[in-house]
Amino acid sequence: MRWQDGQGSGHVEDRRGLGPVGGIGIGGIILAIIGYAVFGIEPEKTMSVLNEVTGEPQQGQVGTPNDEQGRFVDTILASTEQVWSAEFRKAGMEYRPTTTVLYTGGTMTGCGVGQAAVGPFYCPQDQKVYLDLSFFQQLDQEFGAPGDFARAYVIAHEVGHHVQLLTGVSAEVEQRMQAAGSEAEANSWSVRLELQADCYAGVWARQSNEARNWLEAGDLEEGLRAAAAVGDDTLQSRAQGQVAPDSFTHGSSEQRVRWFTRGYESGDSDACDTFSSARL
Image (tube, rainbow, N blue to C red):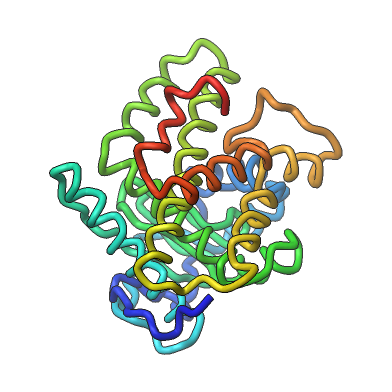
């Protein structure tokens, strides 16, 4: 992926090296559960780290980082801003960029305590993406999904959740989940939300490549491997040795690959209506 000549957004908040502050709150417990459900991380492992992290949200330096990984995140973020600003303009709306927070180990967020074991996530309360860059190494070595474009897919997916918040989709899904008659029904709404974010990542990939011609041979396959690697069935099988479809919250590997591909092949966010689709 030829990203090195890309323009940065300046919307990266760098908290790396600030260090954690002691104690744990309910947010840490929630994120520990999420870490287990999504990434197969044992709650005890998550909590052991979270015990060292609490307090008010820290403020890092905002701008374009000087290191290569930081500049990569900033460049991908700038590209998502260009794509979604254009998409919003077509719909008569204004896109408000998100900020990506880089941290090490753990940090306070608007959603509670965040830390590396839960993976990258979007916090709707403060409208920021949170990313410990060690996840990229985990994506490579543990999930078998190496490469710049695999990492870019992760960022674009989280930005997709920001798009959903701005368009009101997230709030509607939250209401439907709260009104659901069962956990399985609530989970099914979460799956549709996540698959739409995957589709949005595909839309970004197509449109950004048309604008910059920065994808190289094998890049798309990197993204597909990353989408497959974080499917609920793959993660559950890896962590528990069995699969429970009713507990899926993000979609199967096949579904995540299919919706990312749909977004990429169409290049059209209107093709990402997972909520009206009879087949996920």
